[in-house]
Length: 326
Image (cartoon, rainbow, N blue to C red; front, side, top):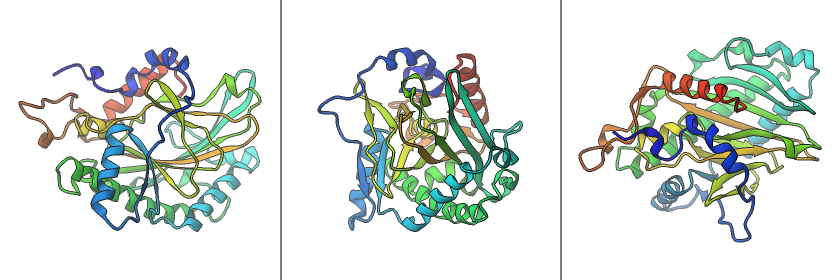
């Protein structure tokens, strides 16, 4: 089996790319558009092909008419911003301890608090620790639980199309992630305006460690993806959900689906907030190319490894290279 680092990009190989990518041209005059897929199209086969094509060629796309009520998405954003508007002492009530869950405020020398975030599990119920869910605003739990139900349904629908795109039954990828025990984690990113935004990134260059990410941003642009040797800005579409292919779907598909390099930039004048939901395998699952996709003519391109070991190894590499964690 070839070295995993020879195929696409894994998070553990990112530090060596940072200097190279930082010097890339930000925008081209004829840059391609990041795909947008309308899930309400009457021909589901066309939707399936569009989702698969975007995942193979880009590793990122936006979906519209996805079934999550617009009012619920607005409520999610309202309660998220209300939390960050609280006094620091109230936010610290759900502060991070030893685990990744909770509230944290990051600083960069010379720049006032350039990143705050709130991280907590939302599925499965057995893994939820409400200690890290804000009690203020009072509607926070109700809104997030309702959003989780819709987000899980949308995620499984997309995974179903991606499974079929690999020639597998619709439930194959969801099952390989642990089925009902697959882990969903929400992170609310709060990026205040920064007059020195050119000195820092809200999130450094990375691919997502998990399987798939579904993200809702506010109207202030900042998410960029790396394709064709340039950084491309994601166009804001009201009520759209951004879908990002992560390392594990790339590995499970034996390289068919692309784990896209991306980053978040800061804005000099406007507040940026985003709500990514990260979907990952159960920590004790072995993850690698699905056996149905490999054989003598298509050998495995990636090592099969316990997901928690992949996770710890990747984060350790980030820490050793002093790459800001996303």
